[in-house]
Amino acid sequence: MKKITIGEASRQSGVKVPTIRYYENIGLVAAPSRSDGNQRSYEPADLRRLIFIRHARELGFEVGAIRALLTLQDDPNQSCASADAIAKARLVEVEQRIRSLLALKAELEAMVEGCGHGRVDQCRVIEVLADHGQCTHSHH
Image 1 (cartoon, helix red, strand yellow):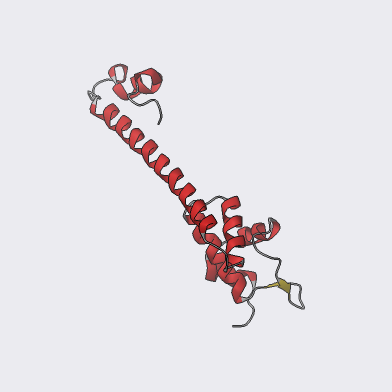
Image 2 (cartoon, one colour):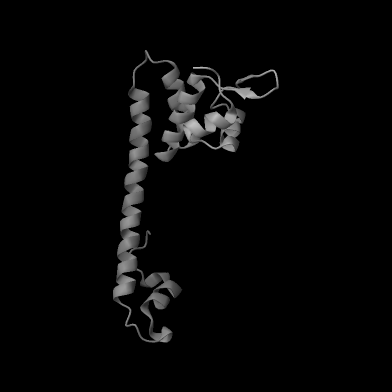
């Protein structure tokens, strides 16, 4: 495969051009070679790296975790224990977020169910929003 422009790398990887430049600036992606016209020229390995980063971001990994995962990927003969630990930490974050969202859902359901559909001065939704102490879950 021949080298491609940043626009084509963006299209093929699903990563926006400014984001590609940002990833270069912070060192997640190496600065590519340049054409005679000083345009960035990306190779297949660069494209695979961009796709890896995009997928990791979609899964909610922070830049630091992605950097660590890329470092691991660059040395494939080592143990995958570090990659597992990073993924497990992300899983814990997701499970905490799910618990928080379930508490939020329950709180909203209670507010809606408690609404008498009367006037605002008797509205349970407004009442609960005005006084956090009336919430059934303190962590939402």
